[in-house]
Image (cartoon, rainbow, N blue to C red; front, side, top):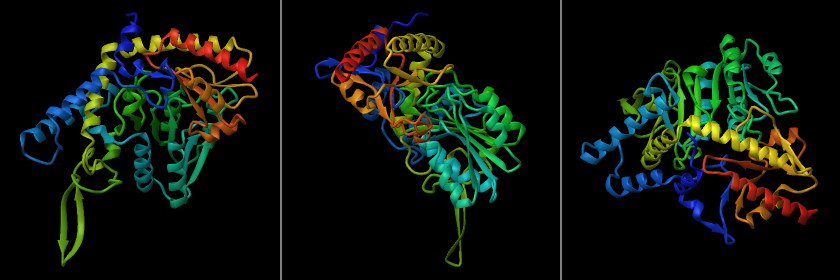
Length: 410
């Protein structure tokens, strides 16, 4: 199936907007992707005709929405091929998911002087939670090195493992380099050493097919807004046998089965089963609804078609950038459509600012991955990241204005 990109562009209303009288060319999809009409309309319809909280009443609207949310849990389970919908936890975003795990797994499966592994290419969301919990619990946080081409140093990874290594938390795809890490190989090594494996899937969820059973990770986390859904919702997949051993991280309504009081004091509090015990408070029902229709949209286009199209477009973009002698590109294959670059002797913020004058949206700066930026001894990068609604015409326009900018600043 050849994708009709002109038709797909029409599915995204924001792409009709203009900046400085120029039609938007949105190339910041690694930060967040735009929303198709099917997602926008479905949530609008829900708010107008079906809105209510869930698990809070016996009235019709509440019952309908409670059932709907559980049906969506099943759809997400099938989308990533987990064993059971009870392995799917609704969270705010990937950041919350990693914080949830750092505050629960460590208390159950580590002791002082044990160690945790992350890599040099991690987003701050997969660095800071582990750093602070390691300080609190007297754990050691070890950093896996990368090679000059941006690839993970597997030899160093193996070297860092010892009998006290308990947790590995690593990104599936680098948010700066776009490099796809050899997750199955990494997890296989970790499993031989009885290490709990956590995968940050923020950059992978809408660009490659995710099969958690095949990957065999213990946890996989992603944010809805990076897969054409709304902000404020994410998914934490976890193997049921591990989830059942963990206590909640946050506490509140909806997760308590009983509170025992004796002699005017609380004796103990009992929780409901997982995954619901990890979902306290009022659900973000609108955003959960949006994931249902985001999955529907991805399934309509078909993930294999998205992969093939984005792969071709990425190759086209890289070749265009390589034709410019002033450009420095970071990273290497295998990669998805995330390309970070700099123009020699130019500030990345200046490039982003000037491109915006032509309606072109890219990301500039340290990309919330300061250790990786320091590895390359640079202050920041310009980052282009593509999605299925981007086209060769978008790339050609971007390159045209980039050449113009190079002439101006040189």
